[in-house]
Length: 321
Image (cartoon, rainbow, N blue to C red):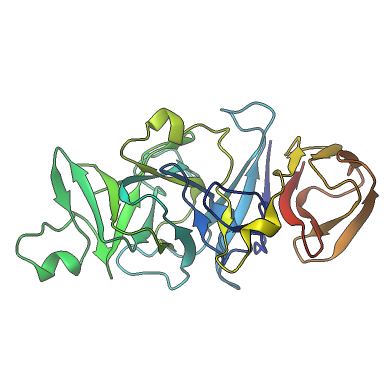
């Protein structure tokens, strides 16, 4: 069963203590933080441009992770094979461990039965070196590759230093390539511990993208592709780490049809459930560290559960089936 839902993401994720970081509620503007050489971002966590043809959908169940659903994004507008569409989604990231990282997203072709169609998007990562590589040979996007005779341009389309990032899968899987007719994996070098950006723009329609990962070269594919990996938390350098020493709030099962459980709360707290437009649909007062909430009366869709005061706050996304 598949359900399609269109919305502009307002924010999600959690507040938790990192070993060297200051974390905050993710609202689409704060950078997702790399930890131990791994960064995992749900594609719908970016701010989808208003009034654009970017859409979100839900596939239930996830064929590779029983008991869960997939929330993905896709482009529902005209295809743009030789130029950017003008509707970029920018993901801010915080790198703590510089090095060489491989980029992949979990994707599938969302229309038709041809692996070579509806399978790509424009991609740019503003690291110090962004390229495709196979057997030690690097290829670069235009116009950067035209600026140095020692650089090789990627075969196929590229523009404004965006590459054509594609994957040839009819079923869900982690893969991202560039360079037509001779696929090259996508890599980026981060030379400093600082903030960078990943920008995605529409190229073909109906490329379904679930999540993207960046993994340093010393992290295995098995680790980076683990579907149980949580989304990376968000970094806010203005926060005081000492004021945020709370365990991560857990919300499960998610997706869910009837109830959600919330663990690791302060003994007394006020929980608020809002829809994607920010309207409050439920308010719950708690007096224990765990709470079970019945949401069977809510319509299917995306919601956010949150709590906040001067010392404690969190926001997490709920998928109601």
